[in-house]
Image 1 (cartoon, rainbow, N blue to C red):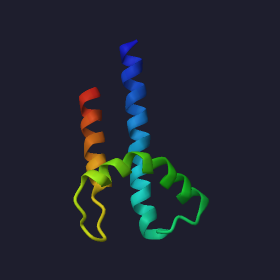
Image 2: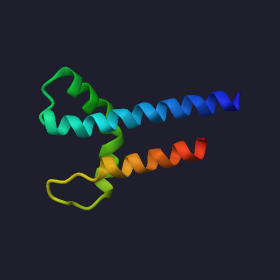
Image 3: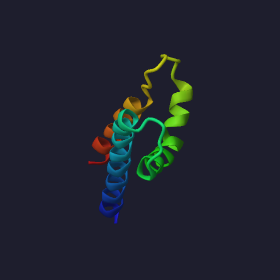
Amino acid sequence: MAAYLANFLQVVVFVLWLLIVGRVIASFVDPRGRHPLTAFVIGATEPILAPVRRLLPQTGMVDFSPMLVLLVLSAVVRALG
């Protein structure tokens, strides 16, 4: 049972990781989020990135919250595996 839970959590973390990478790429291609897929990715990742963004200091135009969340998600995957 524990192995199934660990595998499920790894899949969830991997999907979150892909969504955040997709958001970073979409910020270059469609920064306003006009396309429905971009709007979905922004809506799915904003609840995760917004609290981290509030904790980080203002850095102007550069948003470091995706990088920090990706590092934490990578650490979680390593801890599960």
